[in-house]
Image (tube, rainbow, N blue to C red; front, side, top):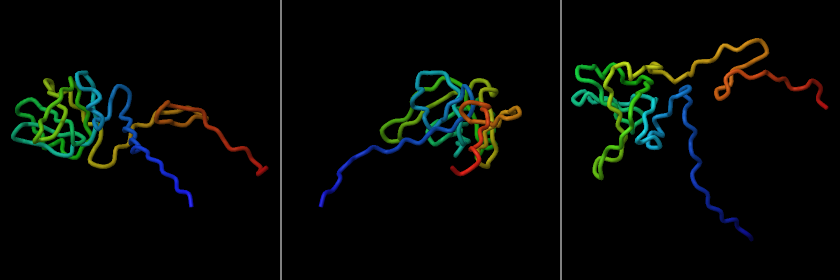
Amino acid sequence: MLAAHAQTGPVPLRGVNYGPGRVDAGYIFNYVGQAVSACGRVGSVDERSNVIIIADNLRVFMPPGHNVRNYWGTIACARGLVNAGGGPYEGRYAVIEIQNPNDLEVIGGSGPYNPPQPQCGPGEMPDPTKGCVKRWRAPYGGR
């Protein structure tokens, strides 16, 4: 009896498309040292430090006096310079410090994220990666 022995790596998950110019905060470590708009679900908040945590690994420091509790459970995009944070005992995380409250945008509520659909013309349909594309039909007849 022959046995096949193969080893493969894990299949990487595809990031969520939050629209042009925005990146999935789940992949934020790819953008350390860059200014980006990173989006994801706000999974927890720290009211004492005025911090919201997006996608479990991006800590967004808000200006003083901001009610961070309002963001819990929403889909938000934080715009700013990404820095690395954390240490050996607290884990690795990324940091964006918000100076202007307009640099944090809520783009979805507490339900699943539904990206906006483009308005397509007749004979077209929306494609999440290309915008509007031409519809096609399978040919009639089973031959």
